Length: 172
Figure (cartoon, rainbow, N blue to C red):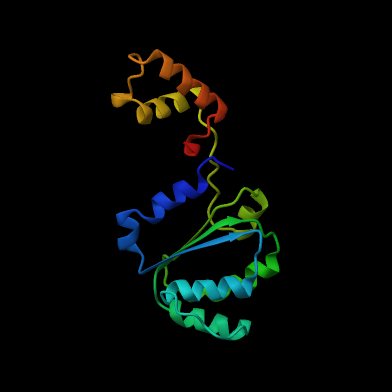
């Protein structure tokens, strides 16, 4: 946690070029409770601008989602996924194939098995910055023009902060 998976994904999701490329963009926070019916319903609500389906029948939910996605190029972000059950993934994913060619699903996870299960492209692993890179980034935000030399006491405090952050760039 804290290496910036969600932050990086938000930057991609909100990029002007991404907004222009996809007809639909959906973002769902999944976390540890992977309930495929609930997730399908939330995806429908995301596509339908918050309009909720009254049914809890998975088949009807899947048909509804499939119809809403049919022929549309979409970007779906599933943030903070932990589920490793391939059957649950397959039940959720089956309606998503109705989207147009070029539709994409981005998954953020700390669990390498989830990435393998979802398939697709090779995962991109975010790593910690070196201490020097993290200090440079911190300094550029904390000091005018990134120059800390005029404030040696603040520079010392800043370096302590960077050390405590363990070079995780998106925690500050």
